[in-house]
Length: 120
Image 1: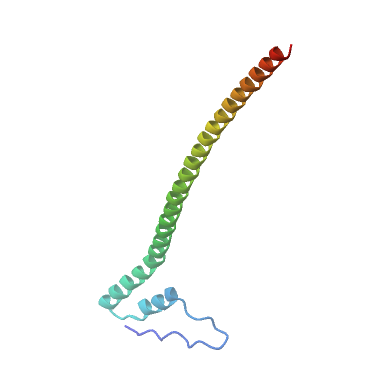
Image 2: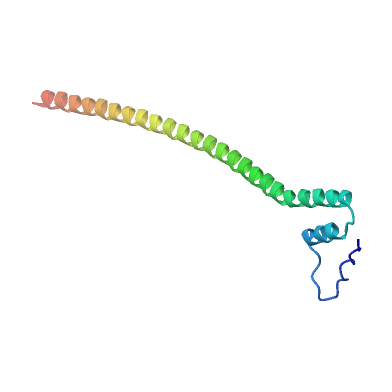
């Protein structure tokens, strides 16, 4: 069995070897089934790593968005509660003002009727 030559050295203009091409070169350079199995396992691990990283990133983003959603819901609930409280206070204030106006109108109306009756 012949031993393959190592990959050519990189020149100044050559791009760096990616991890995939490095592992491919390692697999072809192995000269036995044990080495090929080890190299294929490391190549498979390397292929799963980007998917695992992407999955972990997606999970982290989902968790972050879930936390933001909970915080937003909490703040929204607080705002709605405060708006309800303010609406109730405005309603009470309006009722007080209407009662004061009504009692003031009765006092003004009763006072004029009494003064006109007394002056005749």
